[in-house]
Length: 291
Image (cartoon, rainbow, N blue to C red; front, side):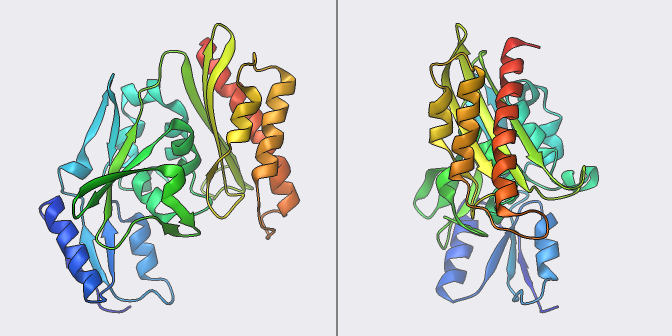
């Protein structure tokens, strides 16, 4: 393994300055928040030496707020913490279901959903759930910060929208209303400890029996997780009847552009993502109804 540098800045400004100066000098860097993926990547073939920049101790990345004004999940908040936060369990059960699929219980004690997002894996479980919940990236920059919706943060396989000198501080999410609930479902060949063949995140708002708002996102069936507006449009204004829900599933199927590999063919993944969409809508609907 090549030699690595290590730095633990004491402020956001210091972190941004270190990232910027390293970029100017052509020196590779990598942010460490949870570190569960960083340690694996360090041992991967072709992974070049770099300076690991530890942001675990920054106050901003350890911020966790859940109130009527909205939700903030800092980049260094482990999955185990959000999974045990009662207010989040009530507000975003779908996002927590997705976070609970990332690694084992031991891994979740350190792994973060922000790290899962920055890795930009097409099969990252938490990402479709973030998109469905309307999450927005809070990005530290040299001039302050900028906000980018999660669906726009993903630009390719393993690639995100962070520019040199920037890093992810955390996620902002709207506080769902009482008649809004989310759900996340995935399919894997094994029951656990596996990556998704297909995944779907759904958030629904139902008022007086009709769907008045919806966000539906798919994962593991395209180069990036993606928001499927056509799927949401298929159920808006309906009572979530069978025909409308079927149309939403077909929209997810049409939006998918999967590959074929040993874990499933492209056509199989398209069929599965449609089924998952229909089922996730059903789960979110049941949660709104309180059943």
